[in-house]
Image 1 (cartoon, rainbow, N blue to C red):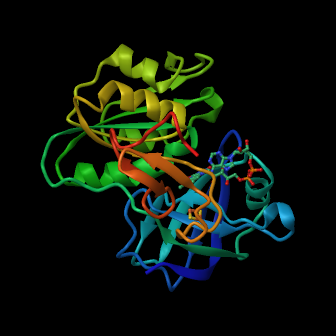
Image 2: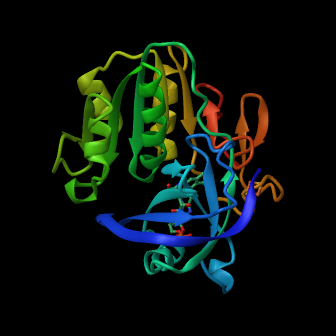
Image 3: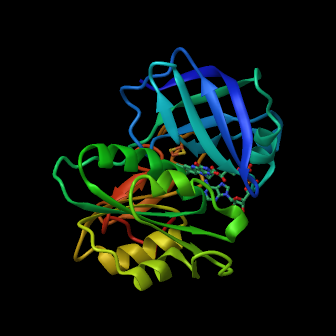
Length: 258
Ligand SMILES: Cc1cc2nc3c(=O)[nH]c(=O)nc-3n(C[C@H](O)[C@H](O)[C@H](O)COP(=O)(O)OP(=O)(O)OC[C@H]3O[C@@H](n4cnc5c(N)ncnc54)[C@H](O)[C@@H]3O)c2cc1C
Ligand code: FES
């Protein structure tokens, strides 16, 4: 069950350029509903600019310790405020929210594709898929070498390819360029990142592969009540926060996002 609760900050550290990892503890956290790809809606402050909660994916969770971690990039006032939070402070969160990545029971090869702040939820997913015996290959995209995070973590899951926009590390360009260059074999695709990246993957693979894509739409309530995150899918209008953020490969309509 999703809960509104104050969580204690255990750690909030910088792990790459403008990127922070925050560890939080909350006795009331509901772990049974926490799929990889679910998110928290976080109250970051007061005042008109900070009125809306900010959605951030759950990076990993530890049911025994009642803790979870998030990884976020400072892009505006809300995330800037988060980066100043100290250990021992309390943060009001609503979660876990949304439909995460379904984990298929069959064996096979999976390709994880993440761009920028779409990278964190894929790690928990990758750990679960590997534990089920699946072969995991990952392709991640970042702006430049200084922005890369979780490299060693993903390397532990299997082959990892990285693309940077300025070519300072790995393939120069986007994840889609690295995929074209490496041409990895896979049966199921899981991806999270900017809409342009997801659209390219959808156009390339929807007819030939199974897969799931997680979308990062602007949100308000995060619980399906305000209809502020509506998007058009082939099955009609859906709320990204409640019906998603994970949708099946081939499900989204891109021309008419509201
Ligand atoms: C389901 C979901 C999961 C997310 N998980 C993560 C995560 O794990 N780590 C992380 O760093 N970020 C994540 N995001 C994006 C994060 O919510 C935004 O970066 C954050 O809300 C920005 O707040 P701000 O006040 O700092 O920036 P603002 O001042 O609100 O915006 C700054 C810039 O970021 C853009 N932006 C703001 N919100 C979003 C959004 N929701 N989607 C796309 N662009 C946005 C704005 O257009 C603007 O250009 C997620 C978003 C969603 C919907
Ligand atoms: S953010 Fe309110 S319905 Fe999705």
